[in-house]
Length: 257
Image 1 (cartoon, one colour):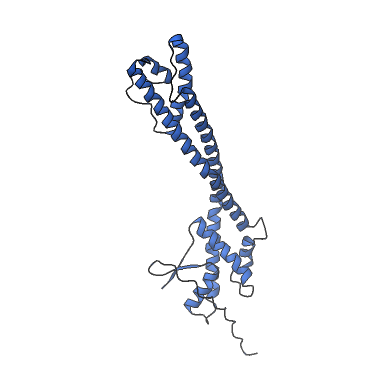
Image 2: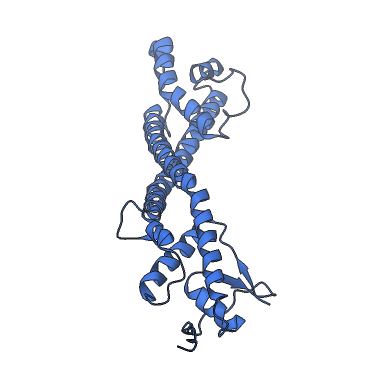
């Protein structure tokens, strides 16, 4: 025996409410919800509950649409910076082995002079921290070594500085986009409890009104209810087929005049 499934996510709640809204306009002679319900669903009223809910949901989608490319751009920039930092220190260490650079020069870039490992590049903050030390360290090393100074190359400190600036800017953009998304999601989440309660109230009202029509069998009542947004699940977990047209609600027979 198919059983109804109440909406329990933002998507299913909105689908339930919008279907009931559309059915109100589609079946003007067979309305199964109250005028009080309709007042909350009325799409012509920008201040109705459903209008506000749809706006909040749309604002979340817009925010996510902006956040996604910003996050992707940050990932690419951070990966490039991490590779640049790694290559910079690997090349410096090779120079130390050849005698071009001194082990003590590592300290200018924030490393231990005897470091046998690269700086920590496991997180975004760590990558940005390591990347930010290179250009500053190169200037400090040049000042200290004076005429003996040999600039780093392939990559240069300037290349590292460019990659660091790009990653920092993209991180700021991505963080701003995420904060916007979080704020919009918070606004939508604040409306969810009332939205879910409204959907359940509408579903209960639809099924209650249909029980007043003894001329309809159980499948017929479910077909009509589905047209108003009620979802029924079969015993195997599948959604009951809703392709068959909903029957008209029988007009109660008139008693003797």
